[in-house]
Image 1 (cartoon, rainbow over the protein chains, first blue to last red):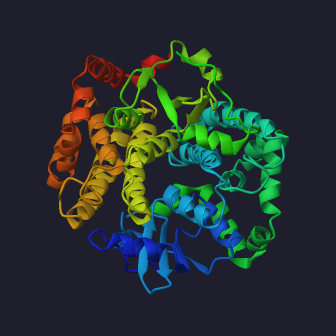
Image 2: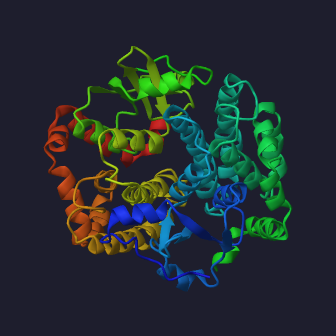
Image 3: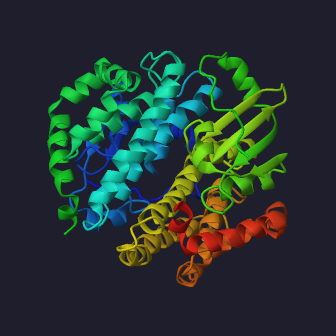
Length: 251
Length: 251
C-alpha cells in the first residue's frame, strides 16, 4: 500500500514542519515484504512501542512513481497536528527513529561512535547485497567467496576489537542498547536467511563478543515479541524464499 | 601517512570527549590519493576554512591495520585541549563536518531532507562503485549499461523533481549551500573522471536544475580555490588514471 505522499514540502514553513516532525502520532513503514535493509527500522519501532504499521507495495513497478525517490524504504509519518510527512533513505529513517527512541547514546561523542559502528555494519550488508546477492550469476560464486574470505572476516575482527574494548558487555558503546547493537543483530539475521547461511553464521558465532550483541538485542522484550509475532515469521519465511533466487522476483 | 590512533576510547569519560570533539584545533583526513568517496569531506573542510591536511596511505595493505576499522576514509582530529580523536566511515565524517560548518540547514526538518538527498546521491555513487567499477571484467559492460539506462536516469529524474519544487535555485533545501548540494557536485565530478565520462555528463547536463547545483557549489570561493590548487589537480589526474583500470592497482 503506497500512500500518496511524495513531496518533501520544500516550500512550506520549516519551523512549523520541524515542530510537527518532533510530534509524530503514528508511522507507516513501506518496504518489500522481506527482512532485508529495513529490519532495523522495524526493530526500533517495535522497541520504542511506537504506533506503527508495516505496509508493503502491491505492484512496485507501478507504485514506485508514487514515492519521493522511487526507492524503498519510505517512512510515512502522521503527526499530532494532522500533517502527513514522509522520509526516505534507510540511513536517515534509522537515525531519525533511533534519535526518537533514545538509541544514540547520551552525548554527541557516543552518537558519533554509534553511527560509525552502525554504518560499518550497514555497509557490510549493502556490499553483500550489491556485490553478491545482485551480482551476475556467472560471477556470483567468486563474489560470495570473496565476501566470506575477506569482507566478513574483516568486519568480525574489527568489530570484535572494539566490543572487547567496551568490555564485551553485549554493547558497542556504553552499557545499554543502541542503534549500533540493533544493526549488528539485523545483519546477522540477514545472513541467517541466506541459502548458505550456515557458513556465515559459523564464522560470526566464533566471535563471542559479537554473538553476545545479537543475543542481547533479541532478548529485549519488545523485540522478542516482534520476532515471535506471526507478521515477523511470515517475513522470515518470505525472506528465505526470496534469497534462494532473488533475480526470479524481477522477471 | 597513517597515524597511530586506532581506539575510539570507549572506556574514557564521554562527557569530556564530547567537549573535546566540539572544539577541534585541526584535522587530518586520510584517504587514497584520488577523488572518490572522500571528496565531500575535502570540500567541506575547504569550504569551512578548516585547519586541515589531506594525508594518504603509503602502503595501505600494511597500514590498514593501524586504522580503527581497516577502512578509509579516516578523520584524525587534534582537539584544542590536546587530544587525538579519530572518526571513521564516510557518512559519519561528512555529517560531522557538515554540522560543524553549518551545512545541515536551519532546523531539524531541513536536516532530515538534506541528509535524504545526500544519502540518495551517496548511494548512486556507491552502487556505481560496487556494481560497475569493481564488478568482474566479464560482466562489466552489462553493469555499466544498466547503470546508464536505469540507476542514473532515475536519480536525475527524482532529484530534478525536488530541485524544481525548491525553485530551481541551485539548492536542494532552502536558499543556501548544504551538504546535499556539495554531495551532488562531487558525484558529478566523480562521473567526469570515468573513462566514459562523456556519456554520464551528457545525461546529467540535460537537467538544468541539477547542473545549476554543481555550478553553484563550484562557484563558492573556497571550493573554487581548492579545485584550482595543485593538490586538487594532482588528485584529478590520479583519479582519471586510476579509473581507467582500477583492478590494476590491487594486483
